[in-house]
Image (cartoon, rainbow, N blue to C red; front, side, top):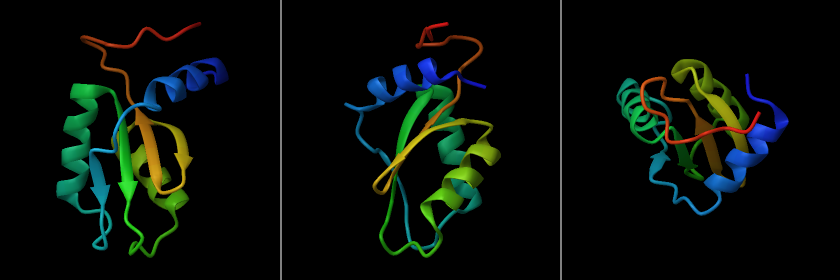
Length: 97
């Protein structure tokens, strides 16, 4: 569980990132979950764009993603979801206490 200070720090780091991953009209599939899992292993902090054609609420999708991927939901802003999962072997992020 991240503290508010850590979440604020990660929001700042996520701000300049591009949303490289997208959830389309077919919503979440096993392949997308696997792809996002690999992305979290490699990058730790990722942005996911949710297409307008998605019927489900962004909050539901974000909750499902964070649960399936064992990641922390950093923020939902507009149609973008930001997730973080610390890599225990080699972390690129040193979170403030």
